[in-house]
Length: 212
Image 1 (tube, helix red, strand yellow):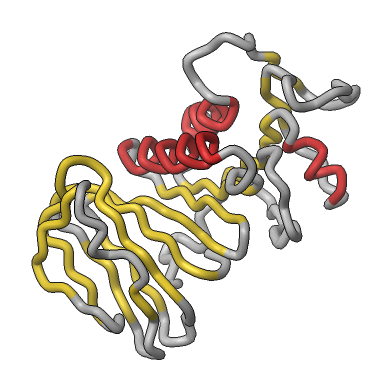
Image 2 (cartoon, helix red, strand yellow):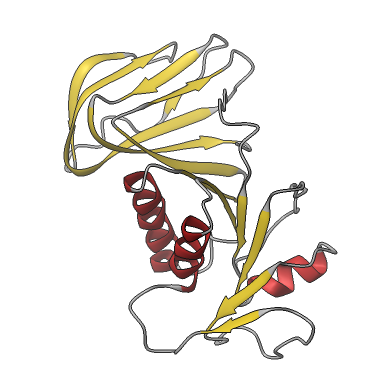
């Protein structure tokens, strides 16, 4: 993937779903938030969060020596969405969310909606896990280099997404209108060339094999 904001500071958010390997290394200027049981994932990886947030329904022992924001069990935001709001308040526009795929399906769907929220705020979020990455773009474009392999799926978020153009993929589209009730973008493939996904007006969820 061609991530033009590669030098942009990252807000990492780590949830409680299983993480195969913690293939990330925060740099100076990055910020790491453990969302509830995500603290245990960071412990296994030998990493310490800058902040721990949650209602602690999935973390049995509340650690000492870590800055904590304790949330009520009954609330409108998920722990992950709350963490995203904090990151946005701190000025972060790029989010990597680990430990948010797998486990309960409703939690995964909630995290995809959180990616949509990030896109609506003008940011970019990546949900990483299970050998795949998910992101959401709004009125924008995502590019991949020729080394990308495997399957890519593109779905409309919202009633419709206008001006969808897919180039460099096995199944191209040009100025197409996707709708929420027709999964025409499922199971496309990279073919060893530079490729792009673009939407003129609307929002797309994009899933592919591998890391961001």
